[in-house]
Length: 114
Image (tube, rainbow, N blue to C red; front, side, top):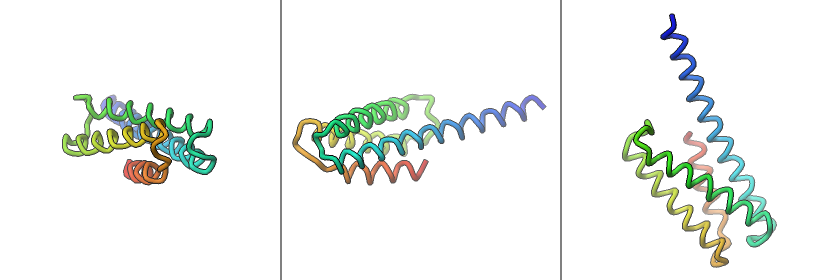
């Protein structure tokens, strides 16, 4: 009886965590779209780059944790994607790029697979 309730809570916890992750990716996408539309070096652009960078740093840290339940090969692939996104965001931050669309597309793809 208790084991069944524990399993239900754990399932709810995992579902809730996935929903929070999805919500954060949605927020990032929305901010990146606004930044793209307003101009790369606008206040919204700065906010979007900062938020998305923080999000991906947290995702990468989680993926690197031994407690992460994803298969190692998938974790490694997602870490590589995250590092790529961080590099692209740094290019935008440094004024060498305005390519929000690539980051938006990749983030959407990851979000849709959660």
